[in-house]
Image 1 (cartoon, each protein chain N blue to C red):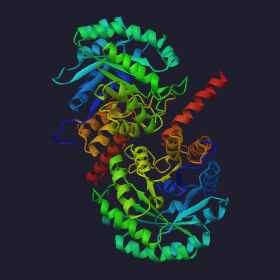
Image 2 (cartoon, rainbow over the protein chains, first blue to last red):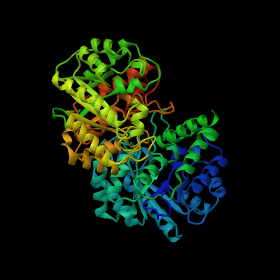
Image 3 (cartoon, rainbow over the protein chains, first blue to last red):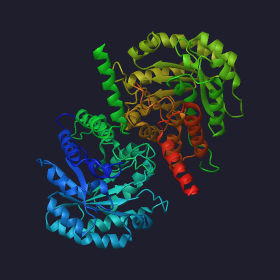
Image 4 (cartoon, rainbow over the protein chains, first blue to last red):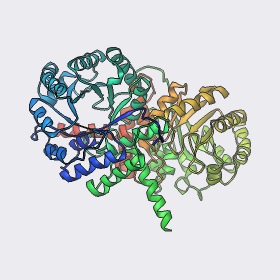
Length: 312
Length: 312
């Protein structure tokens, strides 16, 4: 952690939601609550804790209310959750969280496969959710997925992403998170995309949600930072990016982003050692397997070598 | 592969040497020869095939002569090997390879731990090797390691790297490969380093040897490319970067670099599908375990899903 400096970037932790949603198996509610508490203690200030989609869609997050009820509220920490529709909104409101996150794809086919309606229908569905959230004084985050490419349609037009970002901002979303859902993006593309979006709305309202499927997440974060983005989504340990699962989402590990920025002299407000502790705890005490994050792996290896030295 | 375009970058494959040197266990000579042939068939045009260091130092490469003798020479492909001293040079010359590679560290402590002499003594040791190589019409490649940081000394001065690169170029090295041996480098640092080196010698004589220990290898390659470097070292599948070995070198996977550049519209001359074939062959037929390369993992997953679809 760059001591004393005001954070130069904001990190939005998606592990407890996006990560666990893509993990095999269902974690006990208590483990989720403990995970969120540990992330907050490591310095994360924005944490997406669950999703108010139907438990039929995502059984892993069926305990949304219990998680929201169990987490310790702390000054200066905002907790978010996915809100797919007005039913979800009612549950979100009852859970007393801070950031309502809606989501739509830049690709028609991906949107239809994901939520069984068109992009326009998704926007229409979110309009009353966003209005209700703003009336209730909640922040609204809007995910735009497949911004660098779609698994069904292939290339996605920059203009489609810009149009959607502008529409969501006009509906009242405070932050638009641009998601490279399948990780095909590359730095030049990200730079061009961010520049184009930056002409439609202030980049202070834009985040990047990079996936590491092809090893380019950190490069894309760097490119987006250079282009003016200051908010980045990541998942502790790369949770949800199980390297041996087919269709792995390849979540970018929060430690990898923290280490990138802190090494570059850009403060994140996060204590990397504490965050590595969270990753090791997840591996050893919760999941019983190794996570894919590179910095976690390297730091864990360093600690194990030091421990062996200490014993001999 | 960007069809028909002249390559915009050169990739120097280090898997058979740097990769295998860091793998647990010793591969049969025949497997090494087959690996090199498959890499050549995938389009690699510069391949480091072995090392003429003492077999006492690196038992995994004790069959250097047999490997060099066994590989099929092809028009337009250059084969290299590590040459630590004049004894190694005599062996290299007998093996009829094309590129003699010498190596020295930008950090005194690292150099001493690695080869038990000072940086100045290393340079003095390489002077007659380089002279002999040039007289014999061989290319000379010089590795400068720990350019972004040293495991013993920590930060490494840019000026030390520039001084060493200039000295090696003056001795007659055709290409200087800047090695981020422990993977601590970050894009801004790489950009600054390359700019500084570029003031001392033409960047057409400079390569980047990035390690992925902390997940930043691709980001650093992109940064070096932007700064003018056009030659990059990589190891098929990330060979040598065993994710579960403590002290893993974290070699950058060749497929990850190929995919980065080809997606960015920069031709590499390499057929990514054939290269993925090589990685899968290594995993299944040679090593019996998965390699860490991200693109290899993603492409292998894609193929396995398609195969399952094809069967149902």
